[in-house]
Image (tube, rainbow, N blue to C red; front, side, top):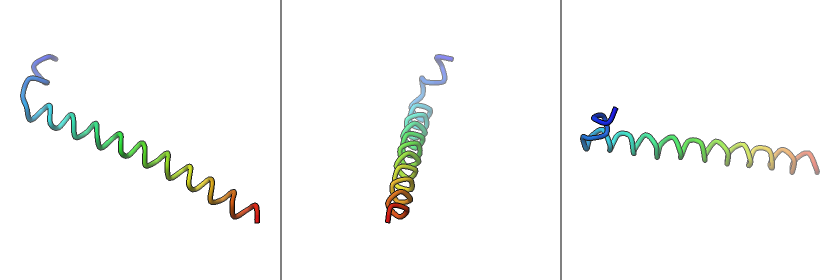
Length: 45
């Protein structure tokens, strides 16, 4: 397993995949939070 992280291209792809997944998870939580807040705000009127 150690040899997979030895080359620079593999480390770059792993880093980029980690950034992409983190961004997708954060965006999902923010979208759900905004969607819930918007629905509550519209239903409170």
